[in-house]
Image (cartoon, rainbow, N blue to C red):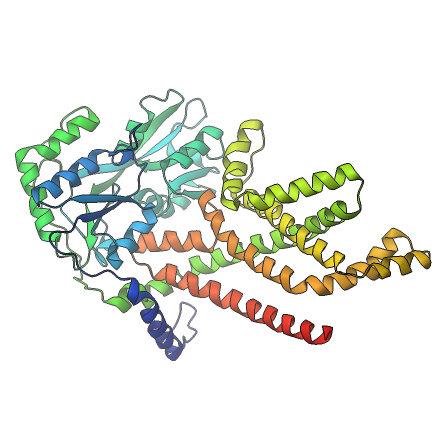
Length: 502
C-alpha cells in the first residue's frame, strides 16, 4: 500500500495499530438498545430553527418536534443530547447515539458509512453579510475571508468553489452563533450556511441580511448508524407523518407557511442508499486506510500549524515567565505585588475561557486578533504564569550563600543572575519546564474553537466530510508520536539530574 507520493506504507505497523486501537475503543462501543429504552438523539443545539433552546432551557425546533413525534409513534421516549456538529458522525457510528439531527445533508460520501431516512426538507445554501458592508454577492468575496460551519454542506461547497470565487481563506466555526459574531465584528465578510436557518436567524436582526441563495439541491434527513435496527421503522414513521400532514404542519409552525407539494416535506420518497452498498465493520469505520490517505494532507497541514503555534507560545512564554519570576523576586514592592497577582490570576483562569474572551470580546474595544494570534496570546499569557512559578522555584532553590559570595566578589546584580544564579536554576527546572512545554503543545488543540486550522480542527473537518472517524484516530496517533518522545526524554532527564544531585 502506498501514499499519494508513492511511498510504501508499512502494513505491519498499520496492523499493529489496528489491533491496539481495537482493544482501546471496543469497551466504549455501545450495543444495540432494547425496545423499552429511550431513543438517544444527538443534536447540535443552537442550530435555529431546527434545534435550539427557549428561555427555559427546553430544546425546541423543527427537527426536535419531528423526533419527539417519531418517539411517540414508536412508544419510545426520546432523549436529546447536545453534540457539536462534527461529532455527530462518530457518535452515530460508534452507537453512542441512535440517530442525529442538525439539518444534516445527504451526500454520497456520507452514505458510504452511515444511513439516512428519507429526506424531509429541501434546502440550498446562502450567503449572509452585514448590511452596508459592501458585499452583495459571492463575486464581492474575492480576496476576502468567508465563514462556514466545520464539515457542513456549506463547508464542502465553499471548499469546492474557493478558486472560482477567490476566497483568501475559509474560516471554519463550531456553529452559527460564533460565525455570525465574527461577521458582525467584521473579521469575516460573509457566512455560507443553510438558507432556512439564516432566514430565520436574520429576520429580527436589521444589521444582517441574506444577500444570495446558493443552489446546491441539499436534502435534510435523520442520520443513523449503517446497521441501525430502527432505521426502517423510523423511515416508515416519517412516511406516515408526511401522509397525515404532520411534517408540513411543523413546517408552517417554524417557517410561517406550508411547503410546496413537490418538496420532500410533503412527498413520501425512498430512503437514500449508497452507490456501492458498503457495510463498514469496526476496522473500516475507525481505521479506514483509504480515508486516512485522502485526509493525510489536511492532517499534515494541521500539524504544521500546531507546531508553529506551540513553538511561538513556548518561546514567548519562557521569556515572559522569566521576566515575571525576576519581577516577583527582586523588583520594587509594588511590582512584586503586581507580578504575584498576575501569576495567581492567570493560573486560575481556564485557557479556553481566556481564549474566547481574547478572540470574541476584545474586538468590541478595538483589539481584533486573527485566530492564530489570539491563540498565541492566550497560550503565552497562561504558560507565562506557570513558567514564572517554575523559574521562581528554581531560583529559590539556589543556596543563599551563592548570592552572598557574589556580593563579596563585587559582582553586579546582572552579572550575578546571568553568570551564577540562572545557569544553576535553569538546570534545576529543565524537567518541569519541559513538561510545561508539552502541556502548551497539547493545549493548542483548544484553538480549534476559534476557527484556527490546527491538527484537531483539520481532523474534525475531515471526519465530518468523510463521515468517518478515522481522521480523529489518526490525529490522536500523530499527537502521540510527536509528544511521547518528549515525555520519555523528560523522564530520562529527571533520572539523570537525581543521580547528579546525589
